Length: 475
Image (cartoon, rainbow, N blue to C red):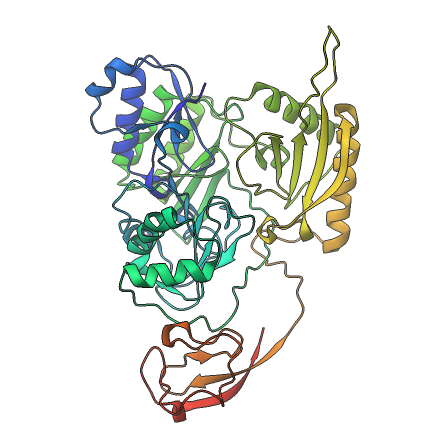
């Protein structure tokens, strides 16, 4: 059964909106709601569709049937995790407002400097650049086997119309990023900027996102995780009322079936702790069990997770910085965890034979899921073999990083230093990198600066070619 989902733009909603959803869920006979990996809300049980008209503020969707997808974003990480300086909470909200249509493609709006929300799980992935209000665009359209980088940076206020243009050209079945670019620039006017350097995604350990945590001197953020992904409606409604009393404007859902409340005032911290105690809410789950991604309503996957976490706990194994996913042979979602446990399809055999489930273990290159490259570790192993093999992979991860345990606020970077010779505009500091050319002026990649025409101008400030100075870019 495919459950009904509620599209939550960017995973962000107000306490009033969440309370309305909870009241609707109660009216439809539910006592709990769940969260999805696309930061949407799930009604996890069968509901009476004849009552939908009573809740006209809600769009009830079955993605596979209705072809509507939720927009995911890393708004949830703003102010509480490492972030790109210009990408504030307010900026996220302005950007998310650009998407006025019901998307048919999965859209990600992501800060590359945080680790809580994966970067490349969408069909259309907008990744913030260092240039204010400009975004890298990485596409993996239906039928594509690899993610490809769009050859220009997208302006914040063009994101909605560029994505809609991409949806509209799918009928052409574009096979390359160059074909997409040509069709999009024919369809819409945009304020693109040239790509002047490759996207850099720093490696951070996966953050601990639960409990009461300080922001600055006088505010806190609260992360809540329930292991069964069934969030009690009475608790949620009371929490929304408490948010409203504290003038907290937004609640944000994570891709890890949890949510975060930011901006709890210092003077209300004790009231919140009493409130959590009144409802018996545990905010001290182990990282061993919080860093897992499971299919929704999959009892077998939940049982396997419990079995593996128990084994980790009994053996006192650390999984700091790692994430785990359980998936099956017929899954149509992209992996976004460090380690993937893939359940194999059972062979079709006639007769009353009982066949044990077998699994494959994969891990991301450098244990960084943002690498988008997975390596097969073992194939066709039994369930009882998984704990030891996962512990082996965990040890391999720490050996690769070194055995130092880093504070979560400390960046862990394993990269080589490279030097690129570029030319920089002395007026606005825009860089011309011959590796990328300048698609905004039809300059193809691998075009040297010396071979540019004398009429070449800076793509941003229109300064003449003579304004560019040779620089060495160290990255």
